[in-house]
Length: 142
Image (tube, rainbow, N blue to C red; front, side, top):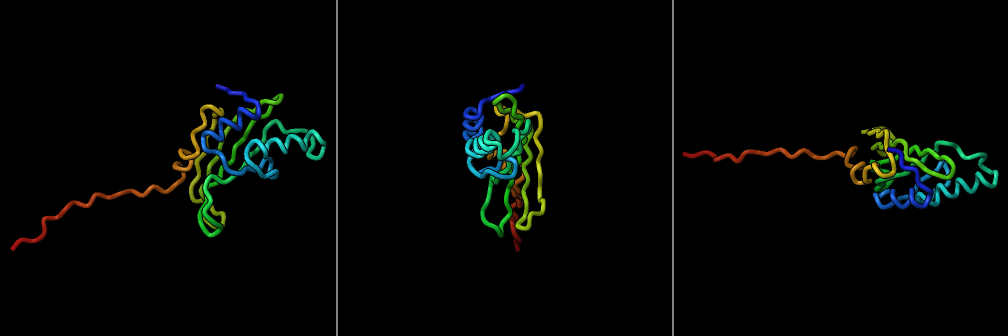
């Protein structure tokens, strides 16, 4: 089901789901979701960016602990039509400190309503340690 939202509603729903970090719209315009998209659209209106694309690419980090550590990146493809936004697909990737792909998950047929929370998306690409049950030995008896 498609959920078309204006910018305020779109950003509010995704922020409530934990996507509250900084993003880039179309590879530039760093800021929170609403700020980044808003700045891009404002530059389109001013003529410095051309006409707005019908599909916007938003990229950002969901988890960052430093340049020497693995990180989790998120890319969202958002359809933009007549001032309304529709989350189309999402790609989440865990990358090492050199940018090499460690694990990736792609989500399609999304809407802003059905998109998983950021914590759920992080869990999809995180390493969850598997605990092994070690049976208790009775030891040696003499």
